[in-house]
Image (tube, rainbow, N blue to C red; front, side, top):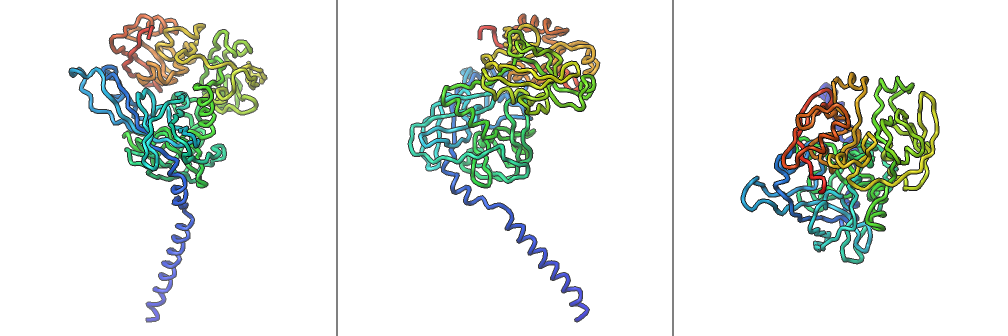
Amino acid sequence: MQRLSRYVTPLLLAFVALCAAQFAQARELPDFTQLVEDAAPGVVNISTTSTVDTRAMQGSPFGEQGVPDIFRHFFGDQMPPMTPGAPGQGSQERHSLGSGFVISHDGYIMTNAHVVDGADEIVVRLNDRRELEATLVGADKKTDVAVLKVDADDLPTLDMGDSDDLQVGEWVAAIGSPFGFDHSVTAGIVSAINRTLPSDAYVPFIQTDVAINPGNSGGPLFNLDGKVVGINSQIYTRSGGFMGVSFAIPINVAMDIADQLKDSGHVSRGWLGVVIQPVSNDLAESFGLDDTRGALIADVSDDSPASEAGLKAGDVVLAVDDEKVEDSTTLPRLVGRVSPGDDVTLNILRDGEPQKIEVTVGNWPKEGKMASSQQQSENDSQSRLGVAVSDLDDQMRSQLDVDNGVVVRQLDPRGAAAAAGIARGDVIVSFDSTAIEDTDALIEAVENAPTDRAIPVRIVREGRSLFVALRLQSADE
């Protein structure tokens, strides 16, 4: 018996210690019950109705909903099945679901721009089950922020936090309507901050592992104090559902946009008028940089703020008002938040020597007019395609292993090129079976391209050649 107790006692003690450790760990996990109780009344469900031309969706490289399966918005389409060519199906009603939250007692509501994009009717359902028709105050597609207004008073609002204080590893929670299930709560941690996603250069996204699914889009992301620190906006997925990676717009960015939308219905953001590219290891060495930091100016548009300030192709922008430009994706964000007309000081490297140049920031040009890499910053053919491109020099041809083509430097997320799946950094080598030698060749090809059929475009992406199907709008649309 004594021999048995010699073994049982240590096992019992180990079991007790394990239970105590698990109990202590459980006590350290956050409790979201009070947060949900306080915040839920300020979270709303948003449903929209819109009429879509089903014929325009035919031939899309992303399937009948026209949505890429990697980085995608997730507003929860409830689109009915489409039968191309069927009688009477030139247009159909499309219904979609999303989330939002109240930001003022008098009925202002924030959500994502893509949730209400193209909506003919917007209905907001409150926590108390009231349904109110909403009007769109304004939407900014570049940051994916929209503001709605409902006719109501004394609505419950949410407290705004400071997204600049967020730290990686911090607990956060989301409330939204995934698949239409109102006020569903999910939680996780901040996985990373200041993430830049394709076609979203103006948003330093918060990356989390909070479970987000179709219908969550536009809903709030909370910290443990119950304050809103972000708007859930995108997911990374290959299946269409949550795969452990989701992204939120920092609330500091969103509120600045919301204030502008409420005041004027549109957003003003700073503009330099340059085409930029990343600094590779080889380019860093050639320019005398110790690492691959900064944004390399590939070209400067005529009559732009950058041109007037004396910026040149080949300059590497290292800082804006002493705030470091870590890579090429940082520069648009830093300049974009500057009010047009204000002066900024750019720290640049030119011919291996550091310099400071003061630039009076301009106002971003009208939508649909992208700066080309040639002296045609608002060329109609560039606007039709929705890209800014630059020619390849011998070094770039060698690095990219191509004989001809132009490289995509900037991309309008609503343009024909983005809809076809073309991304920044792609090399366009042929357009409608015509070899593209330089920017002029692409401009000519786009000007002569038909609008009544899909056009084959061959691109080179990360050393691989592939074709995409592209549809152009007519020049007067």
